[in-house]
Length: 292
Ligand code: 5RP
Picture 1 (cartoon, rainbow, N blue to C red):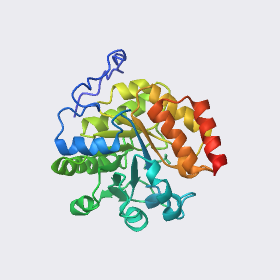
Picture 2 (picture 1 turned 60 degrees about the vertical axis):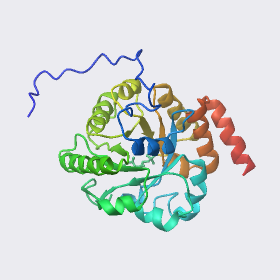
Picture 3 (picture 1 turned 30 degrees about the vertical axis):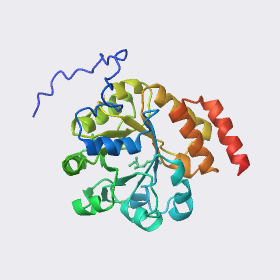
């Protein structure tokens, strides 16, 4: 047990000294193997260094939430506009056509649902994960949750061992317990814990001071969208995250619960890959929506 006395908050994030990406275009990946780099290159656009991942992994704990009642109708048509599809094995197998060539980030943990106490998760079997031909594997860590932190960290660590065996990148999804402060200090801690434990991608939430979260995490950071917001607010959040150095989004509800999901994912893509300003991206969304 480390001595917990006098734990001091960091205040030297070197914001004027970007991470060295001269050898490979993604942060923290220089020492990784060819297979892992090749998979990361399928997920992260080579020109922008960023990604728009489409998250539809909600059903394993929430059931048929709004927008995901029929993944074959709502998500499959969006697939071609996403850089990567993030979902669970059941929905990918049954509702995403195998001819799909977009990379898949497989949600590799599963467990308790919203009907009980969430996050008591286990991992899928190793062969089963590999059989799904994933470009990345994802599991959640519940940092700060006394009931599930140890279990989720053990899951995550084992998943990184499996990922490293096959050169498959592992994405750490930082859960936020209801008692956790949603601030840069917490998300910085959770993201750093994920990176220190071998994540190749960290998925977390945007917050004020996000530049510090990105700076102290040694691998690409993407943001979750969170609850459905008005389109302009979701585009502003994505824009601010990118300005702070995020490597993209792994967005779910703010895309598939939008009135015009294809228009929304294209507008998010313009923000992420082109740095389009939110008002301009909203205009793009409105015009694509009007076109139908
Ligand atoms: C919390 C998550 C989920 O995996 C989900 O992908 C969240 O997506 P969004 O918040 O954008 O709807 O990150 O476990």
